Image (cartoon, rainbow, N blue to C red; front, side, top):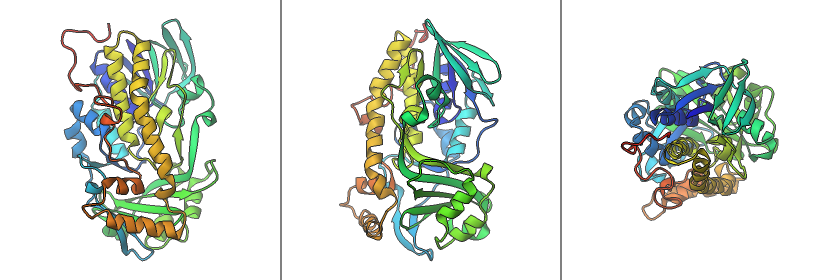
Length: 408
C-alpha cells in the first residue's frame, strides 16, 4: 500500500512512522520550506504518551523534556496568587515539552524508507477506482492507495476534498499567540516554572528555555474570528496594559514571521473520510488550546489509524473502524473544551476570584483533580478508557501479528 500524508506535524509524523514500520510505502509532504521552530510548551500525557511508548520512542522524548515544577498565576507585581502542580492534572506520567522538540524526535526517528518532502503540498485531488491521484504545487503527480490530510486546523486536503474551511471551523472566541525572545531578567524570574498573569479577558504566560531565552504565550478574548494582517501589532495591542514583565516582553516581540498567531477553534465534520481520502488530528477533530491534549490526541489517533490500515481487510473498512473508535474520544474532549471555554480565561473579576479560590482549594486531598483540570484546560481522563477498554490504542500496542503481511 502506498500512502500520501500531507502535514509533517505530530500527527503526520506519527502516521508516517507507523505505516512505514508496518510495511507500507509513505510519501510525507509538508508545505512549509523547513521544520517550524515556533510553538507552545505542552503538557504531554494520556493516549499520546502511551502511543509514543508503544513505538519505543519514550526515552528519546523524555530526553527533550523540560520539567516545570509548577505553574503560578501572578498579579501585576509578580506576586503568586494561585499555583497548579502536575499532580493536580493527572495521576499518570506527564512530560513538559516544546512542541517543536517533540516533532524533532518524531522526525529524526522516521524509518529511512519514508519519503519526506518539504516546501510542497497538494493543489488537486482526484479519485480513480481504488486509488487517488494527488497533484502537487511543484507539478509532481502522485498516485497512491490513500491520501491522509494531517495538515492541521487550516487543512488544504480538507478544503480540496470536503469543502471550504468556514463550514468546519468553530471559533471559541479567543485568539492565541506565542513568541521567543531573550531577557536575562525575565529568564531568572520564571526559570523552572511557568508563570501566567492572573488577569481578566486576557492572559500572558512565560517559561524559560536555554541561555537567556524565554517563550511568551498569550490568549485573549475577541469577537473577531478573522486573523490580523500584522500579528506583532495585534499582540502588542491585545496585551498592552498588563503589568509585571509583560511590557518588556512586548518590547522584545520579534517580527511577524517569528510569531505564532491563530484563533482558538475546533474542527467539526460529519465524516472524517471520503472515498480514499481521510483526515487525521486537528484537520478533523481539533480540540483547541482550551481543551488541551491536542498533541496527545493527534499522535494517538494517528497510531490507531495506522494500526487499522495494517490489520483490517480493506481500506474502506479500516477508515470506518478508525472513525468508529476514535470519534467518540475526540468529541468528548471537544465537549469538555467548549464547556470549559468560559472558565479558561475569566471574563469578570468575580470569575477570576472564583478560579483563584478553587485552585487554592484543589491542593487539598479531598478536592478532585477534575476541578483543576476544568479550570486549566485539561482533562485527566485517559482516552484509552473513554469509550471502553482498548478504544484509544490497539489492544496490544507495539506488537505486530506474527507471520502476517499487514498490507496484503
